[in-house]
Length: 125
Image (cartoon, rainbow, N blue to C red; front, side, top):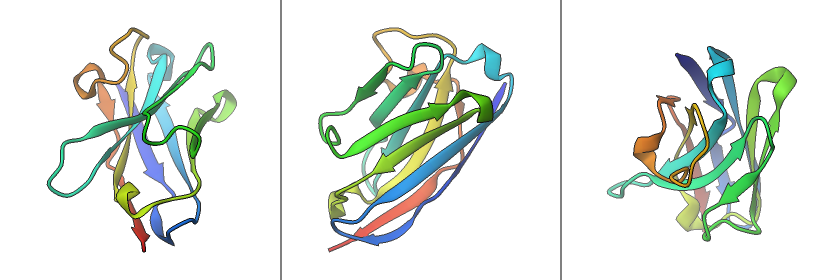
């Protein structure tokens, strides 16, 4: 089991930036893919970005490409989500998640085994 703890959420004005962190502990060696998802009120949880621990390959939802950057620090077992040019529609609870191996379903919520508790991001207009 992998334990995940997110931090870094908050309130920011449109056009601003935030950096989210996700610290992993436990059986981290069993996890190759880390993902960020978000869920706005009344909406389904959706994929934001993913990264592979081993290869460092990154994947993004079209809605955040060019604005968000996912990165990892293997020594700290921590994944980051740098969010720039934030928009009100980015307001949501952001979750990090892990899955044991990479496949073409990396964007599916149900393909991730472990989840953090979430951190709120609010972007005001």
